[in-house]
Length: 472
Image 1 (cartoon, rainbow, N blue to C red):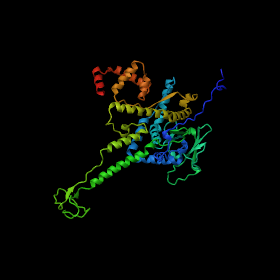
Image 2: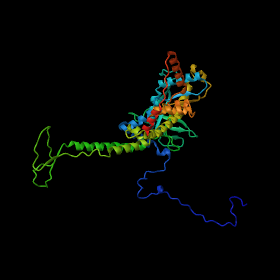
Image 3: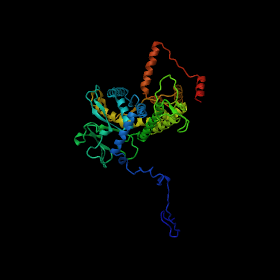
Image 4: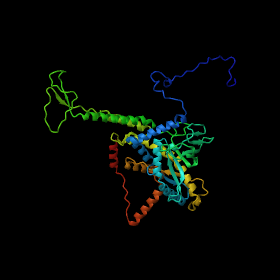
């Protein structure tokens, strides 16, 4: 055997051939040169430079403030993701301690208006590209735990003395040698505030442990966020321009009550009438027209037959960058049937679950750790002194099914064949299964004491067949 990788002396030599591969998308010619003129090789942070992000933020806020569709899409996204707010469930074996901690955290969350702040953070993430929150102390809280969540806009996290990026800092965020945020530079006043002047004495250096930074990273090495509705900004502008153009054309046609026209040639037999003259008309009157002239009206051709279709396609393209179906973005499901509506919603609600999981890890877990740190200092929670962290999970609002009867039947089937659990089924609705079962046991016990019979109804076979036939 000849050693591997060694050529035998008597082996014939092979000619080396250069392999050439060609991609149509890599070709630049006269037809596509202008299309790819803005393509560059900038890094993620260089492409999202401070000036670029400021321009995108300003334009996104403008559209969200003045475009009804943009405002509705952002509000719907925040409401669907946050809902009434997350709920904490601890997974330790000590049931009594779990209930005490969960109740205390719920009371504190209600005191600081946590659900409302999470909705604002989700809207800021869509419009500004990122959401910042500071963990601060608020002595005016009625809760024994004085921890508070202070929201700040992305404009306030900036480096005032130099807007140049280095390996250790990116526009207001300083990193350690491992790439972890070490501290944030937070301006004490908003740059857009009247009389604001950038100065080093107006900056607070906040440790990273006290800052929550929530954004979506689209590229490796990206440290600041860009608006999620950024790809739709030109489309929002086109949508408004088209609507205003159609409205203007319709108004122009409606401004002319009537016109005088003649079929006679120039200098013909028609009576002489001054061109572009204006004649006032009165209600319910009869009049005689000049000889050879006829009375007509401008034909209104706006809006065109494709007006609604164009707006629908444009709005569908706008909502695509947010994984939102058209009927949710437009608030109109008139063109949907049951199957297509449910299919579109599956993709949308899957993206909602992804957002909720991201919020759990970035926002809620950091908030819970800070809350537990403060709670350990209180006598009522002294038993937490030796616990570094607690096993837990977060519950969000469930999604309402389009057909509750079919969903109930499917739940019964899954439970009967042991392919699901009560915990999973209650989690789909955003509920704690232990709490719900205890409540149900109390209700049954009270009904038994009052002598009330619990009615149990099952769908009849003919009803199920009728429902299936209607769906088909």
